Image 1: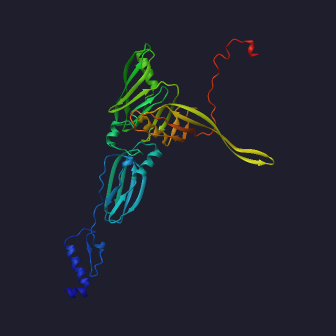
Image 2: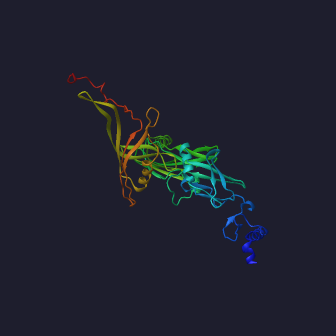
Image 3: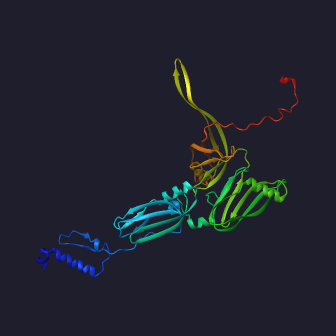
Length: 401
């Protein structure tokens, strides 16, 4: 029999094929061998299987933690469409390798969409389709371009403000605001203040206000220290000095400590959650006027052309503790910064040119930060100026003649 099969290998192949079909072998396991022992796959007789997803999909992710998604298919390719709500943000065809398809670097696709559209939260739907069927995967993504350590995305979405500075310094005149994800319904914002009375005594005053949400969405609301102080003063019917206050919304809490120093710089910046946030810190600023030009020689004379003037500002902060240093790092590396003082109804765009940043994790050790910045508008600014008091009302004397 062995000699017979050696000279007639096709009969051996038929025998093995007949046995395999009798046992209903699954596709890609029905591998047949001839006498030369060269393996191959008989696709003509393989049996189809549904597209399957082997990656476990969580309901909520930080954008930095969205995993690669692996699928098994018996088809040569899989069509993939990614949507954010009803908007298609990515589509492509993936070709299978050994029956597997992997969607990689979904983080970049989702974060690019969020940045372009100013989103902090995106509802993602992934539709994968091959000739045997389709699979739909849905999850919620919270934008975060820092790596999140020991933070649960689902609990963060419903129980935290979109900030890492839940305790911060602020100042009267700094336009503070908070951002969070609200479910549909009416929510109560509780504000607890500590104020100083004209006689020097310190007391507290608490109040609340309502915030309605017609649907689940990301909401921002103002918590300006100046507005909080005015509310407390009106309720107590006297002038008060705001020392600190806290804002509570459900499980979310943020505390503000009002600084009373003469020189406080306040900026808007977009934080790691792609939210607009205000930051205030004591600082001394030096203004430099820089001139840039090209020079040419005309005859026997030098001439300047393409002359441009610009202000640059060198700012050195006061001593900051470890928590403040972690927060100011987001400010220095933010993709967009605004000066939190409107000029002609708009907040000027700020460009950070250079900075000297050093962060120590030693408890209680304070550090200062130096950074150089300028306004994006290269035109020089005519600042408001004030005439000396009494310059037109003081009694005339002959010594000015």
